[in-house]
Amino acid sequence: MSDTDTIVIGCPECHRANRIAFAKIDQHPVCGACKARLIRGLPFELTVDNIRTHMNADMPLVIDFWAAWCGPCQQFSKVYEMVAAPFAERARFGSVNTEQQPTLAQAYGIRSLPTIAVYYRGEELARTQGAMPPQRFHSWLEQALDTTPFA
Ligand SMILES: [Zn+2]
Image (cartoon, rainbow, N blue to C red; front, side):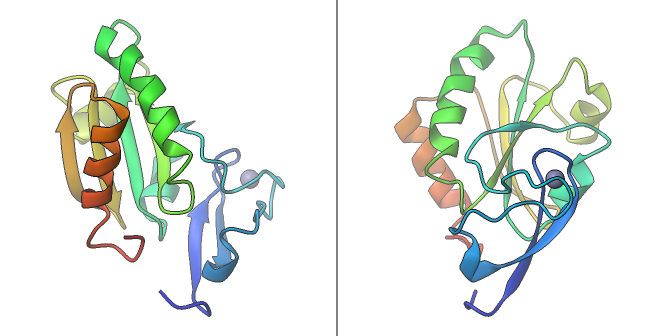
């Protein structure tokens, strides 16, 4: 990706699609609609109503499919948050509460929790199951992003 390219990413607050200059991704871009910071390095909730914007965006989308009753999910959510920060300019980090979003759990074929998957422009690049320590998640993610312009 060159400095003159623009990319479309979804706002983590109002979920509107925003077009920004790729070169300005590290300059705290804000949402044109709600003025929220577009790049925060924090996971945000995905629902049937907002997932399309982030799926179709020009930045890889990582999703943590979880549930409140799932112990390993609680454990992994801290790891997920921790690793989301250093990857803030390379991927979006979404979370799907599979109890509140059964339609999404079904649409993405989630059979075990937590499931972590990486999508780029709607295509699934990688998927793994079960909690893992930060270093392992970090390496897995590096590998998953390897074929994207965000490698
Ligand atoms: Zn917004």
